[in-house]
Image 1 (cartoon, rainbow, N blue to C red):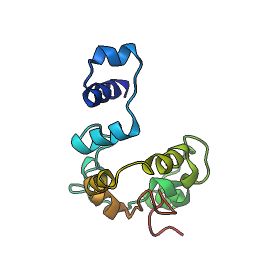
Image 2 (cartoon, one colour):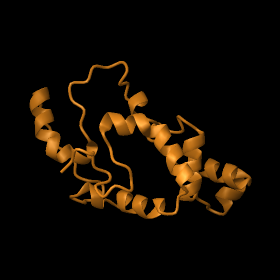
Image 3 (cartoon, rainbow, N blue to C red):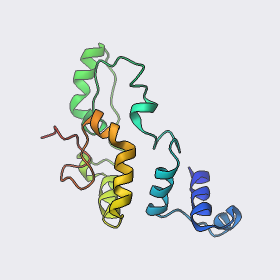
Image 4 (cartoon, helix red, strand yellow):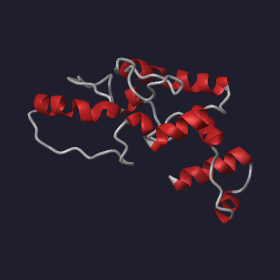
Length: 148
């Protein structure tokens, strides 16, 4: 994703791509959020899930939350009559609320203007609704609202 980061910095700071690379510059969280808000379909990883996962075209038998995968895994395997193993957390945190990305999101979002937060919510509102997710200010973030 370095190429995309270089492009974000160049556009946000009105400097040439070569200068970004030469000075090894990276986008700030705010610059990244601006880019996501203003460029839908930026990257499938950050695109809205309901659209990129094809919810309108596929009949799903089970919609689970990645944050609860370890709890839901046996149900899913029984439903699909499969027996596979599950990888652990990318940073080995046993509680999704304590993963590095969640801790950083909580910290970084404190400095984000409410207008930008509202724009992000509007962009991802269908995902929040379909997957019943809380927002970053909720104490159980990133857990679905029915958790607990």
